[in-house]
Image (cartoon, rainbow, N blue to C red; front, top):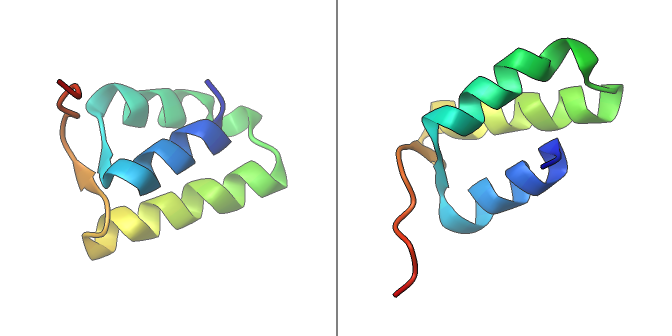
Length: 60
């Protein structure tokens, strides 16, 4: 998984999981400038409530 893939998944579903948040925080020291910008944008979207912290329900 890349930060770009995670960002797109969170944007399309409106949800980011605890595991994904842990993945982002564990790797933030390895991010490029572009990835840092995406992570900051992701944080802003979470802060404003556009993306919720939770779990995704599988598509039946």
